[in-house]
Image 1 (cartoon, rainbow, N blue to C red):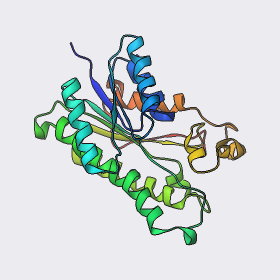
Image 2 (cartoon, helix red, strand yellow; image 1 turned 90 degrees about the vertical axis):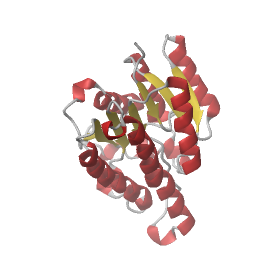
Image 3 (cartoon, rainbow, N blue to C red; image 1 turned 60 degrees about the horizontal axis):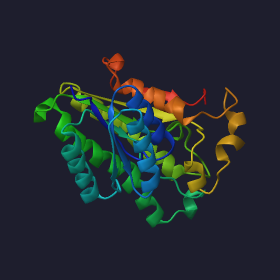
Length: 249
């Protein structure tokens, strides 16, 4: 029997890569989306294949509708099915106050973090929903503890985009509850990944570790464990839920 298939957006590095690798170890075939880091995505796919799993690295900027549609068609052609989506792709920008933010910055943030997640979910629902003849499935959205904390004087735009993901998760879970699709989210806190460097503060997580009740940063593997559990049959009665992976912060 063919294994179930999960598409992980932003799967070449960080939380996405950890999720792809763990999902493969748990028996999933994995489509690993990337926008720019082709070599890293192929490396993740190679690790999965080396251990007998099935993997496909597929390029797409999730902020571009036509590229998202092409990505899903490629997954269709390669695997012939889709059983789950992890909406993980996202961006931050350099530290700034709201009164310093340009419209271009805001449009990029919302296009990738919010609209990209909507469009990927739309394409997944068209394939997985029993309303459309699918077998059902699961969607896990990667939000952030910033949605609760606001990220003042740093990334209020990022925090707001993740607040939108929380509302999206809530609404979509109810919309699809009778169509065989569970929709949940994880909210990572200060996690040791490359995203901080892309925002110009590579040591940010470690600099703020003292604000975490557990007094340490988290790992991508710890977030991946929550995501893969939400995808699994063990979470079969869980929808519209949020798991904070934030050390108590």
